[in-house]
Image 1 (cartoon, helix red, strand yellow):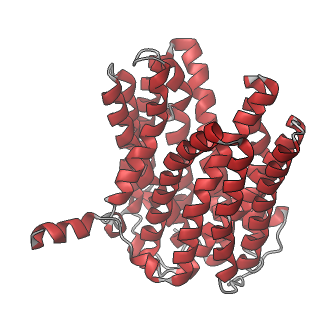
Image 2: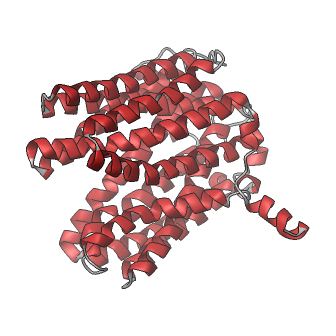
Length: 419
């Protein structure tokens, strides 16, 4: 490989510099490994619930049961992470996640076939996941320098998308060749990597003003968002992207026009494929300073790509355009996360990450509702294409907010956050 080509590749290849820091390296590796197991369980649970009930209604209840704990413990867990040692919070949440997986394994081995027990364990898993995710996000700025936070987030989101691709495929093999109990066992074994990473973290006591975790602390966090246009817009544009343009609820119906049921898997995988490719070529992401503008541009691309995929009459073109959308979504996710981690002071980061988890998890669910309801009223293609175009148009309004439009990541300090 010639020197110019090698230099160009290094500039665009994913930035691995955060892996120089042992604490981050263990967190990254632990999450990458354990997330594969998490996705295996995410497939095994609905399969087992359907085996027990034969009802898609009860499969749908899995998401409903998990949503409320996700919201409550995402907000509360973030408040706790701002008030006590974050290592301790991460360990407690990790134990909760591990315990829920072991509970699903025990339930499967016992042959009880109780949907009530399974849904209860899913609720515990969702609550623990919210605590772990909000805490882990607030730990990253403590274990890598500010200039590497964007690269660290890119690494994390990329490996998560790899897990979203490989986990379900692994689950299909395990369930078909062995059993649901084996699937839960794999998750339990793989999660040890994340638990080990949390154990090896140094103590991370709170910095700055400490608020007692509770409703008042959560309200203070929400007030911080409401009075900071940059942070508020980072959440608002994500909600616009997911509510207006998330097309996944329409995949089964659209697959009928693109080759039948066998094509639906490609539609679901396409977003993750694009995200993984974008992550592998993301060396440029950390060099962008105007992150507010870059975030809007990424979401405009997401909306237009989704709209184009809705018009595509061939599977390969729909998958290609959705992959572009998935790539843009990964870039926007990195900038949203990085803005939160660098703009908010350390004593607010846990609460910001808690809200981030709620928005990231809740937005797509609201998008599913919007897409389905609109499709029932005006048709699948109109719902799909119209949502993408509306997203691209509405998100441009964020540029009317000067603080967000002019936001420069390199100029932000933890002592001047009033803009």
